[in-house]
Structures are given as structure tokens and as C-alpha cells.
Length: 259
Image (cartoon, rainbow, N blue to C red; front, side, top):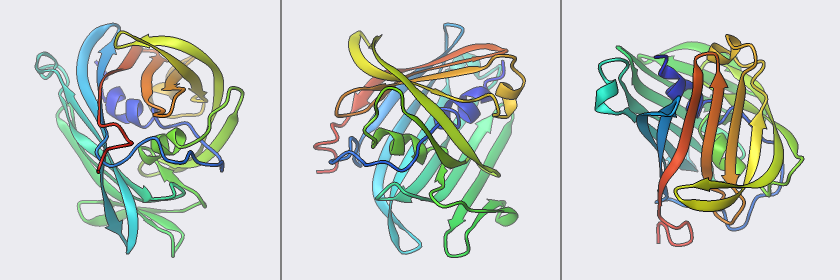
């Protein structure tokens, strides 16, 4: 089972979408202390639990930064086939306008992938660092966000049906434009609750990896159309089948989190 799709595309692609300069919600729909838990299914078979967490505000290069964390762990029964265990971290300024750092330390199968990307805005360069050595440096377009922080940026926006938007996205070694369409608002049922939600579809036709190998790949994301802007569900349709990521539990109301 190509379960690296979970870590490389359920996160990278949960975030391969969005978004251009736009006004932010006030207050933001999240705060340090928020934790969201999800179940991942492959063709309706439960394969893993993942989580999204807003950590305490930290200082990066002398600037205050949000610390966003994604964690993934396969269920024990799947470990004999393709174990996944680890985390991805993203750091971005409090205005959600640019990333400072991206970190990944993840076991995928029998390979451990660990690296860091430093966004040096003074030099206008993003350095890809592995085993303590910079192995690749690329030019840094204005407003670039990492593949995890961009999800929280999207949550900060006043989404409306019909929006077509774009933003530079860093997914590790590369920076590329990401685009998506806010298709419509509809009602979906998740964790036994009917949610008004925005359906968002990123353009994955030019994405690499498993999307590139698929004849008609699709990636669908639903974000709640309320004050919390919760990522509710993701459906990824590729040549190996469908991956479904669905909210299982949400802890910490952003109004009181961190207080």
C-alpha cells in the first residue's frame, strides 16, 4: 500500500492549495492549544490516526511565530505492511504572511525522512537542510508559506463560493504556485453532525508524485463555514484508490485556548 500518500499528500496536499492576499478573520479561528484529530481510511479501511496542533508561540530569527504540528501514526495492524510514524512542523509569522521554517521527521515504511527548510527572508533564499548540511537552495518568492502553515492561512480567510486563488507553496525542496477553487457551500455530515462547509478543490493536475501518475486525479477539501473554519474532511482520488481523512475529535475552543 502506498501509504506515504498520507504523509506526503494528505498533508502536502491538504495544503497544496491556496490562497492569495485577502483580509483575515478577526479574531483568528484558532489559537495555541487547539488540537484536531482525524481518522484516515484507504478505500474505507481505517489505516491511521493523524492530528493537527497549534503549539505555543515561539521565536524564530528574532520574530514571534506560530508553531503548527502534524502527527501521523498507522494503526498497529498496518505496521507490518507500511508503518508511518512521525511529525511535520511549520513556523510562520503571526500575520500568516510568510513561513520561517519547515521541519519533517517521519518514518515512512522502512525509511526515515528527516529534513529542515529555513526561509531566509533577508537573503531571499530557502535552504533545504539534511543531516546538518544544506543540499539545496532556491529563490524565495514573496509570501511563500510552507505546506502545513498554508492550511491555517486558509482558515484565516473570509471564504466565499467562486473564489479562485493562488499562493507560493514550499513542500520541501521545491517552491511552486498552488491554486484552488472554492467550489460551493454545502452541508456534509462528519462525526454525526451536519456541518455547513465550503468545498475547496485544488488544481493537482501539475502536482508530482502519485497525482502525476494518475490520469484524472482529484483532491477535495471541506472546511466548516462557521467561526472555527475547521478542516472537516479530505478525499483524495488517485490511481491507487481513494484516501479519506475525516475529523474524529476537536479539542480546545480557540476563544479560550491558551488562556
